[in-house]
Image (cartoon, rainbow, N blue to C red):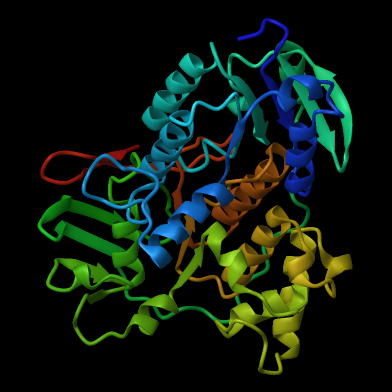
Length: 416
């Protein structure tokens, strides 16, 4: 590789137009390497590129990205998908590779495997990294540009860049609004599993899982990609038929004893980043939060004065009371997520599930989001299951339930 070429990273907050940034990188004019890139064929690794290949596979049975086993790209874990896409792009021998969002939702071992691949690649291939979490800066990067809106706000060496960050988020003002009504939840664990095992098409996923979740507990659910976390959550939320015939109790009732899926779901507040795309109406921020009282996508019922008052208090907690009439769809990803958590919490459900809630957020918004979760954990009796591979600064779950993969399926281990 030409010694004049430098591996370059672009640190961006949420809201930066990535299409604009990609165009600027390829053109090279803004950053001074246009002559170099014009002589090269490049490739882009991003969530949108990954989604393109998944959709091609589903719609047209076109499997361009080889998985190396019997599974398909669409049915593989996030880690397997990302590794396969990276190898697919590398095999094309690009002169340069632009990487965006590579490490999202990946476990430690998968990150290390991909990092080793990129370090080897960097000896002969020019690499550009787009990132928004300071601890994800690749170790061989030589120059870091900070981007604000559509301009360069700074250019740093890696060592100088790492010293830029002070405390990113302050605590929220006020207190968590109280519930309007209490829940009639039987005494005992909210969730109780004893020796639960799951297989799919003869392939073992979970083996003899025993786990109890009680009111007010703050749990982190961890485990490598493909270890069965999603399967476990689907049984808790009632979305998986694998819970039938198991020694599984949800909110005091044995699974399959006559309860409906909606009996279970009304007890649970649930959030995953993918939820943001489900709300395509022009509802305001206030309407989004109020709709949580009715578990509806949109607001179709006239709320009571008390419900509106509670919504106002939540708006104040998350710092959006002055923007209550702004359309939800126009918010940044991070602010949308805070609204959706407030929406999930207006009724103070017995259980709140947060599935990779900080995935894709920048450092500042991740810090604010974790501050909100810590506040909920400290001030309510809602039990929390927090699913993440990443240890967020300031977030301190009381207990960890870890899935450990094995040839007979993942087993569970509790860490205190």
